[in-house]
Length: 305
Ligand code: BDR
Ligand code: CA
Image (tube, rainbow, N blue to C red; front, top):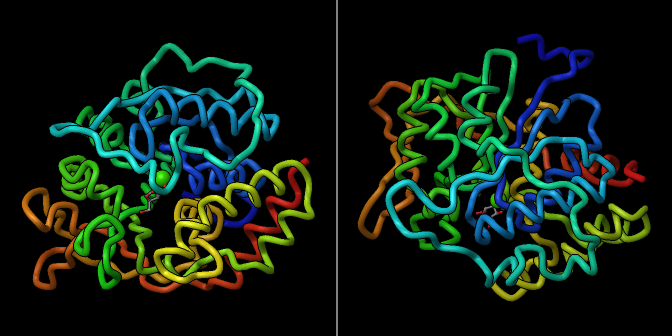
């Protein structure tokens, strides 16, 4: 695919909004390098009812109601759902303020159906939640140009258990299926997202911006409190927005071509382990240009009406 700066890249976002998913959607919609063709939702940070409603609310806020939203899996492939109200609240977007009810409804096709039809050469999938929908679509032979997934961790401790990052933990069977599908996903995990935190200077820039900027600042206030309490950080990582950034400008991260094994059971459930002596099956982000990422994110969010 032509990834020169002039080519506008068609993107589908599979997500579970979620504060950082919401910020990732706004970032994508504000970026001319990518053309958001559709959004699919999955249960993860909250139930599918909330994540779908939140996706519709966020595109409405950005004035992009016409983007199709397809509702997806109610839970993981083979186990019960674990949600994250401790981080994202009871709605999935707590602290975001009084938001208007979505003007649109989800389309008739479900997420896996939509992805199966639309993931084809030339299209990039940015996945920012558990990989349930994506695994189903790949199982039906959907083949996008590239999958950029926010999930997993290699050196960094997990954020659900010491071994596992949330998206990998929630549906490890789906993650294992995606890494085994021969599509070589780009894994944007905690190793890089924990480096890319939106500190006070950037938060104030956003608060002084338009409606989308103020909404983002409110989301960061709520979600940042959790990271302040758990890690002592003065700004939260916006994990999912970094995955969108990689679709906009792949040079923002350095990746290594490695073999990732996803553990599905036991105390290691959801661990994404690099296995040295096996054929590479993924591109793992190992370094990020944090300052350039945060500047890009803020300037794009500031540009929204
Ligand atoms: C991931 O889990 C969710 O809580 C976030 O939205 C992000 O996708 C970080 O581990
Ligand atoms: Ca997410």
